[in-house]
Length: 395
Image (cartoon, rainbow, N blue to C red; front, side, top):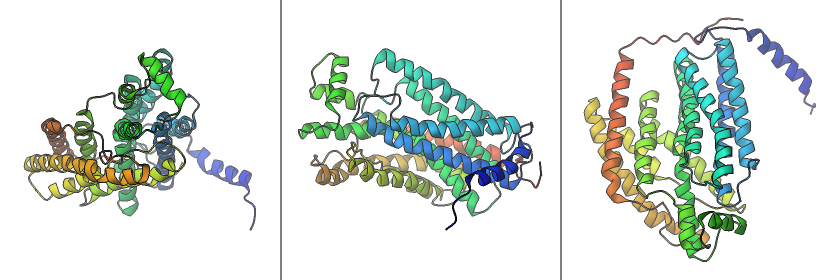
């Protein structure tokens, strides 16, 4: 076996890339090989950010916060790659139209501004462990726009075929992960409370003591509840239906094939299922897994059997909301028994607390989002698409 000649590989890669480093407007004709390199680069960047974020919540339910914690470093590596790609797109104009470039630039900018604000917030307010704090929301919002730009750039420029469909589904799965990310606070929190009720804790004593001192109370169940589930119970299911299932409706429309919403949801849930034992068996806290997203995705796909857009949105919103709330109730009753068998917890820990009365608000929110997507889809279908990204240009 011959050794890898790293300097020669780097020299060859530089020789291929340097001629493309020329100033140009967004929408510039892009050679197919360069287009693929750019978007596979985004795949790497988003994968690193996914791995970092997947570890991050579990880490913060165990250890006292640390700016240089391994999950933060892994996420930062992905951000560095994303920043590099943003600069390449912005300077050369390759691989994106104007709308995609603006989304990527604004998203990256918001994320980079949010990072120091989050650090300041933690210095001033201590743990601020909730995923729903303003500085954390800015991080998700920046990533939201960034991935939206990547999705648009790939959607507009990739040539038809299996690769286009698969990568579009992958980028949309990353998008779903980012949208659902704050919900993980409740998914970890409910199991942490269950562990406390069974005379065990996942968090290290220093973290519990710090949180209790910050709240001005002893380490007791009330403190654990405020630490683990600091938001109203209705937030989890309403946000899951409106935001999470809204992403799956958009995914079904963009990919345009039956099963698209189900597969995007299954990709994300499959990843969460895969890392569950990796985290748990290495000593990190477990979380409830949002299996209900797959049920909701299937209902989204089935709703597209209705041809009339408004009727589809109404029927789909009612069906999806009912299915998601039913699946969440089933997870609480059934899936919790699986976790209980593994961790010695009660049978109510398969999902965060379910405020059943919030279903009306969830359904109304999803209906509004679905109707907006239908309007946008119809409007886009009536307008010519000017995509000049893929061509046979040479530098």
